[in-house]
Length: 400
Image (cartoon, rainbow, N blue to C red; front, side):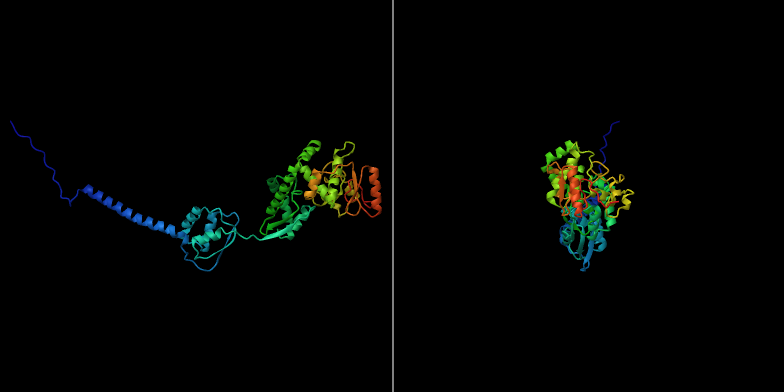
C-alpha cells in the first residue's frame, strides 16, 4: 500500500494585537519596571535636590530663643536628641541633620556649654552654633608656696570649688592618687604653688589634676638641668623623685629667706651623708607639726597638740613625722614646695654645717659643732627666740 507523507500541521499565527499569554506577563513586568524607574528617578531627583538644599533651608519652628545646655562629654546622638526634644530640629529631619553633620565631619567638634537656637534656623546655622567656641568663665586662684593640703583646700573652697572637706577627700582619694601616679596617702607635695585660672565649673579633681600637671612640668625641667645632681643623690642616698619632693618640702618650711634655702638643704644632706653624724635625725619642728595637724593618723601626743610644740611632742615616737625620734626623711612631704626649694635640693650649698637656729628675723644662725650650736641657741633664746624648726633639736625651754 502506498501513500504520501502527511505534511506537519501549520501553527496558527495570532494577530499582533493578540499576544500570547506569556508575553502579556512580560509586557506587564516591563511596564512595572518602567513605571518604577520613572517614579524612582523622580523620587531620587527630588531627594537629591532636598539634600542639596537642606543645609540652607530655614526651619519651620518658632523665632523665640531656645536655650540648650550641652553637657561636657556628651555624644552627638545625645545632642541630636536634645535638639529634637527642644524643637530646634523637626523629628522627621533628625536623620537628615545627622547625615549633614557627619558629612561635615563636625560630630566631634560640638562644644559643651550654653547654646542658643531658634526654630526657624537653617541646619547650617544650627551647626555653626553647636561648634561655636564657648567663653569659659574662670576664677583666678593663687596658691602660695609652703601651704599644705589643709590650707590649699581652704583656698580652693573660698574660691568656690566646693566644701573644704570634699576637696580634701579628693586630695586623699586612692583612685585619683593611682591615676596621678602618686605614692603615699595624699597629693601633698605635688600641688605646685602658682597662680592659676580655673574654669568656674571645674571639679575638685580637675583642679587637682591641673596643679599636679604643673608640678610635673616644673620638676621635669629641673631634672633635665640637674642630671648630675640627681645621679649623685641616687648613688649616695638611694633617692628617687619621691625623696626629692619630701626634702624640698622640708626646705620650704624651714625658711622664707630664699638665699638660705641652698644652705638649709646642705645642712640636711650633711646630716644624712656624714658618717660621723649619728643618729641621722633631721630634727626639724615643722615635721612634728605636720604629723599633728595634716596627717591622717595622729598619735596620742598629737591629740593634745594645741598649736605649740611641747616636750611630749618632741619625744613622741608614735608620730611618724617626728624627725626627733625617727631617722631620715619623714614618710611624706609636709607642704607643697616651690621651684626655689627644689633647686636648693638639687644644687645645695656645700658647707660643714650641721646645725641651725632661728635668729628671730626670719634668718638662721648656722653652726658646725654641737657646742657652737648650743651657744647660738642660748644667745637667741635670751632674746626671746624659740627654735622654729632648728635642725638641732633646740627645744622650747618652756616645753613641758
